[in-house]
Image (cartoon, rainbow, N blue to C red):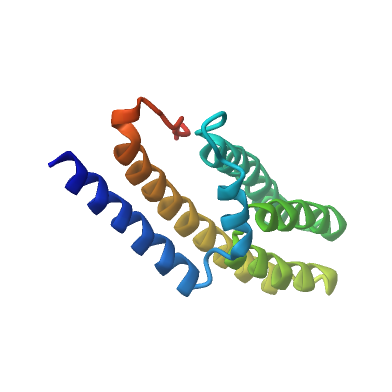
Length: 157
């Protein structure tokens, strides 16, 4: 029975990954990140992604503060935050988040506050979707390898 359950969980993981690739949420960089994980670092991907989540939430909070809490937005600083978020999103394969950052940056370069506000809303939505789906993926993986004694650290909300 254990083998059947492990096979079902692996199939669930593969279906979820296929969906995320089909939707363009993830790109091939995520697969390259997975290839760096091995027996010596069984939690590598989840650890890298959790660092990404922590840093991204700080950057999103800063972007929101620059747009909402100030009448005169600092578009240069906004661009710096977006470049950081774009780079880290690219490094984990978060394709849709990266693409929204590109559009957001174009609005910030034009000092288009209304466009930036719309882009921030889309960015926060895409980020939340990515976070939800990757947590789901890691939970399935954790269930799959539970018998082997491997535990994935989950970010505290």
